[in-house]
Image (cartoon, rainbow, N blue to C red; front, side, top):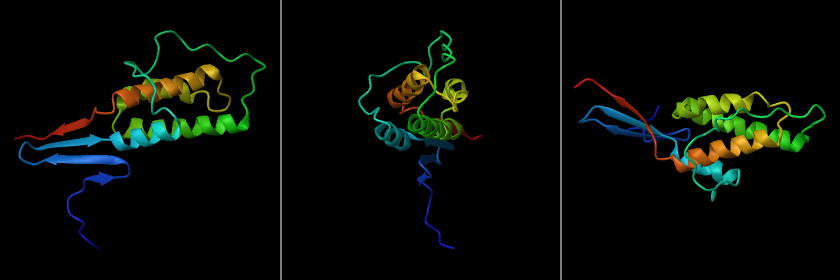
Length: 134
């Protein structure tokens, strides 16, 4: 076993520790940048909410998503779930709505995941903060 010192980065999560103020900050800023670049959202316009207030329209009964597009959609949802479970609980509802259509995503669902990614990209500076008792 080797002691590598204080943890500062682990599995896509940045860890910042302020011992004096007994505060721990967790952020996935680098992972969000990586995912945004991977799914070509790097230069998307900033957005202030992860999902619109109007309900998503359903697919038409004859809609069949191509297998390669479905696989890409599933990969995006998996990445969003990792971000959501790690530090960004604010996107949980939007990711939940998008993940309901993993088997047959339509254009409106792809638009939704791109919106979530744009939201994360524009708010990537947000971080989870844990404060201890002084």
